[in-house]
Image (cartoon, rainbow, N blue to C red; front, side, top):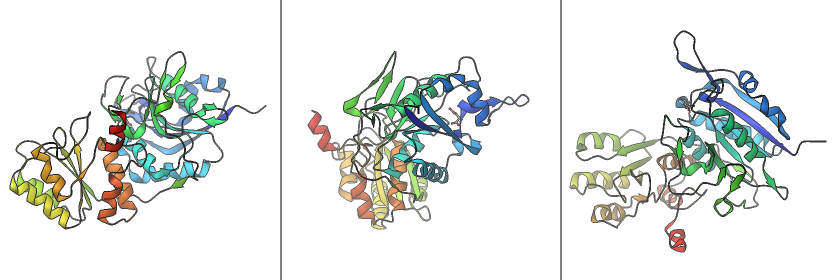
Length: 350
Ligand code: ASP
């Protein structure tokens, strides 16, 4: 008899599959066969497991939009064959990859679960085994013949999160990710408890994969005393199409005329400016304070409660579609893949 579900495991690299170089003591990626030998439990699942490993596994600090395109292609090619997908990935940039894939994979109706670990799988106290085993179980989970999860998620240390709501906040704890503005999609204890109300419902449309990404984006993180000279050089970076400004509190910034004039000039040149907050919890509300009113007036787009990771990848995705600046602005404030809480839905929850 066939197995209850099929899952494709895609191994990109990361600590989970690394081992320590005997001489230099550096952590380096090793091949997938060695990884699967470390987890004999994988063969006990009632799940048909197939694996694809990158020829050259990478530390996720070397992640690149090219690799996101490769991952999206693998998912598109194998979409009808498998019930779910697990991507093994370094934790450092996992939230960027999860966010990027969420935008690239429109109308997704199957689970794409990213996981990794803080300690390599060969280390006795590794967190990698539990993360991998439960991620596979989630990717295979079905109810009434339908996948329980149908979005891009991160599973790490007993929690399943919507990928585009996460960021890596701890480099030392097993509990490495946070999703401050959106609840966990599931929690694994004795059972896996799904938060059904928080899960995305598939829209019934055919999967559409967007491969074009454009990285002509700059980031300006504000701090008291930021200089005109440096601000100006960032805003006038050659080829820049969008600028993410990381502002204070609820989206506030200096009201100094030179700063306002620089931003205004950029918008007039057709550069899209997206305002996200340096606070990891809460949201941008332009117009709440005098220090954000001018931003709103000049046409800076409010990033609401977007993470930095989602802001950057959403811009890459939208710029990749060769939209006009106004169209990019219109899409930025829309909730495309569950990545932000619009003001309307906030009001509904009050
Ligand atoms: N440097 C590693 C990576 O992101 C860390 C990890 O895997 O957690 O690839």
